[in-house]
Length: 353
Image 1: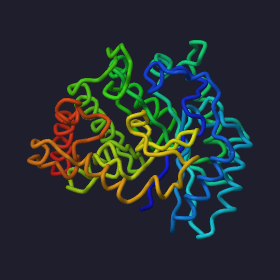
Image 2: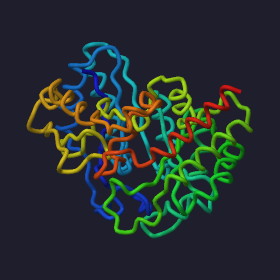
Image 3: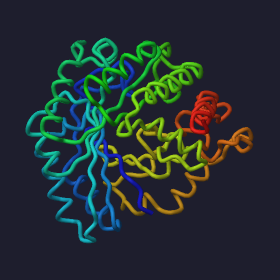
């Protein structure tokens, strides 16, 4: 079973202190980096049991804090242990603050797919995405994005929307698409279903999410640009066609990935990385034993236990009760169910016309 690893090479360690971060109220300034023996054991065992394509998603925290020698070692180990001659695909999600000419050249030479977090224009971005000293990071990230473009490095961006920034979505969309000339971005919804925050005032409601998606669809149509790829619109379109959407939080099936923490512990995914969901520890166990078919199938069965309302919904195949981590703990229902149904129906009418 060829699952895709999300590798938190530095755990929660980060040089920013974003107000909506998963780990905002946890320790983020403690330097934690995956030990070399865990890295080597993981790459060896993963490649040993993988055929055709081996995908690595490097995540955090801020993964670039692992350092340049660390990622040089990654490439060396991938070459050393790729006995099955897999096509190796590396992706990395970064806050963009540490990108320099060295990193850009490294990512270009080693065919990394790069994702950068930027929340639109300066006002919206700096409202939430601050460094440890409380200073905004927008100007620095824009400069680094321009460096990547100058070097012809392909990258995508992720825009997080909160209650505080949703009214500025149009300005943020225009900034990304027209000023920064971004042709590939995704939208993260800020909700608190899997957070431990005491302050939940920035979480989005169903009405917020519906109006956000509607505005995004309208803006996308106005651009009339076939090269503009927005993950949410593509997944809504797949749902309209009764095709299982490609993104896991649209198809409600989180058995495609697993999350490897810096210390060797393994979880179903980054959003489910808590003590209740530990699958095993690669420093003490073999990877194929932790990710056994039985373990994965049992987890898949648990996430596919859908409410009766879902089973009767015409969009069940294109939603499957949404992201596992974003389900109401009492009803087991996807918290943005109504927003999703409204969005799919809205796009369906547009496609039919």
